[in-house]
Image 1 (cartoon, rainbow, N blue to C red):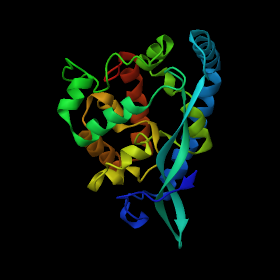
Image 2 (cartoon, rainbow, N blue to C red):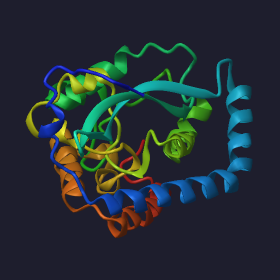
Image 3 (spheres, rainbow, N blue to C red):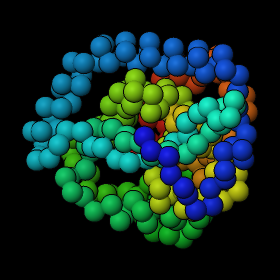
Image 4 (cartoon, helix red, strand yellow):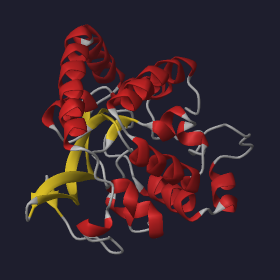
Length: 246
């Protein structure tokens, strides 16, 4: 990971969510134990998905993408949060070399609250449905299934083992997303990014950006080992019932 300077970014002193040191130790133990066990148990599924992706079309099995996340570091006898880049891994769900401009257009509309543009990207969207663009031609047949079942996120267990991410925390944005952050939104980076989070179990892609920020900040205010475990348990029915997913 590498520390970066961001436009509109607060210095570490302005990312105030600290938390007790004991919590972060317990959180790391939970991350390592759960991620290790899950990777071993899911290894056959990983192999099946890898074969399906290769059979479906040319390109790599794993998609690697730069993301931003917080890291708690020692500075001057205290621990502060800094924003760093890291490589996040997913199973590839799009055609190899797919143009990312549609996602950037969608995220710009989502982050700025451009409802007209969001409506044009997903015509006929109903309440509690995902904001994501519908009928994305870049998504492969296998990729569509992986997305609906959230199986494309499983390689992030490796990110958790590496310490880039946690099982629970705010989802990690891309750099061009953070360019649109204002005010409290930047404070959601005062945490290791997570595979799942409070905002994900409360609505995933069906909630607006301001609501997502509110839920992420609520998590940072009250986070504890028990709250993390609660979110992990709530993630199971959310994934199985595909709430807020495409």
